[in-house]
Image 1 (cartoon, rainbow, N blue to C red):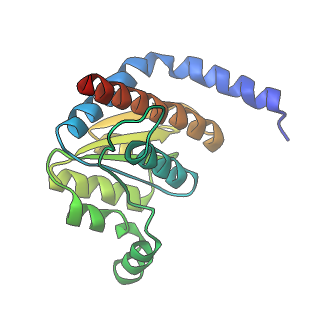
Image 2: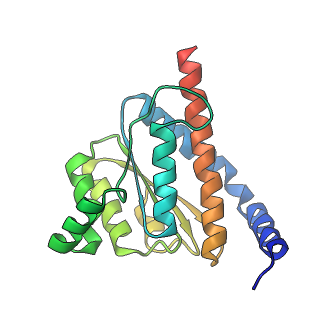
Length: 190
């Protein structure tokens, strides 16, 4: 079993390797802020630990990150157990995110997918649905980015094969998005 020190050293090395993508993270955060401040909705989704990241981002926007400010329109597609099981049962597991996006997504909305592999069928179908709806898609990925890397409008690939380390960097990215959004909303209110 890897010690905490080993894991933290791995994370530090990974953050240094990921650092050249900082400008892309900031640009994506800015693009998301532009869309939400223009009245669009952010949709998120993922599987397993990535589902938790998707829920985390959505709740920070509807609730608050650090400061009290107006809520921002955000929906986590993996949060509704009834819808997930209904769609999986009737249309297949690969449609659990795509079907609600087709129902709710509008041109100019944003989809943020979290996937350590970039190859989950339901994530790929969500990206197809987002494109069909005229949405902007952002993929937070790991490993080599998988098929999602080429399907998303914007892809951030954490260069690691360790899911835990990938998700830790995804957490930092989602907090960077929250920082940008919150600051922009507060500046707009001032």
